[in-house]
Image (tube, rainbow, N blue to C red; front, side):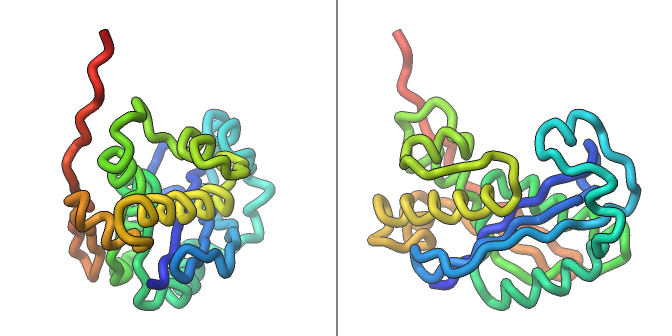
Length: 202
């Protein structure tokens, strides 16, 4: 199955302020391509908090394309592929809010959340943040760099597929009762699933 992992970074606390997106394309569990696109956000307001997380500054995106152009490229790369993201509710909300700002239709896609899946797949973990999952599987990781976040998200999906889905992340999510989310036009359906029970500490 062809899978595209994505990760957005935002300029400030507003979901409609994307300043970069990382994309990693997988054929099965094999990474075939990854890249980052800088984005000029609708409002060039960067918070010091967000800059401290991802290191992107206004000067980095002054000449970058805006979201409308990036969305065309992103849609072309995704095609009919499954989209995955870690904490996908955030990334999907970035797409939705920014599309609404520009008066655009949502791209048509089906997506799964590796955070939801990891909660169900690894109940021994108290938290399933991307850096903790990277450490669990010994992935090299430069956290909060969009391309690296997308790459590791896809690798985590591969590990969940390996351990719970005969190598297929989509199959693993079906077994873990994770329901895919969808975007299309002006419609949105969230990715949902059972909350994994945590072991009680005594």
